[in-house]
Length: 262
Image (cartoon, rainbow, N blue to C red):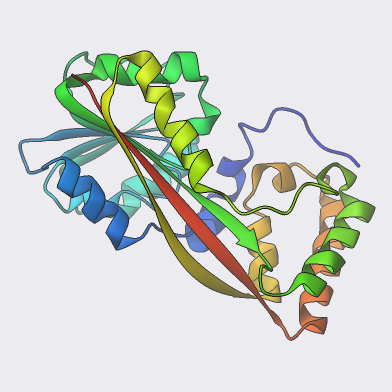
């Protein structure tokens, strides 16, 4: 199956769809962050990989000054427009690894479903150097689990993957676990962080057949599929969902890891 190697470029090609179909994060997640660190107009935060800004607004609404870094130019422009009414917001276009930040200057560095793109031995030391003493790193991500309630639909979609995207066929059907969240939380200890905490949050999203295929079209590996193959692939998935009642449920697990610079 034709696929373009090197996926960093992919998200920026679908910025508008990503903004529309990728979910925001639960209110309880932000409450957990704000219980862990107090933010106000005197605070400085940096967001790593803002994407479509799904995680940004609750931080801005504290009055905190937020500087986002985003590799994709289209995403950067989208977020400049999206948060234009907030004078406490700015965005820098570039890779987090390459952008210069002041040391010991940030109360919060956070990243939502983006930090896995950054090499661990680069990302964590850089975050640590950016934070003030007592500053906080918040890493969180959404882990979708489709068709938990409809194994027949799941199996049919797997057969379509076997035909059009065999690399994805046969992957274990497993929900994101608390053990996995705990393992990610422990990474921060290796880089000098303390006061490690983590939490999980759950929700269900319902998609029509066309909406689900639009969502698939925002995932890097699916974007990279050659266009004519991708259209046939998505059409088969859409038909399968419609044959099973017209909707597909996604069961999300959202994990949050918190760590503090001593």
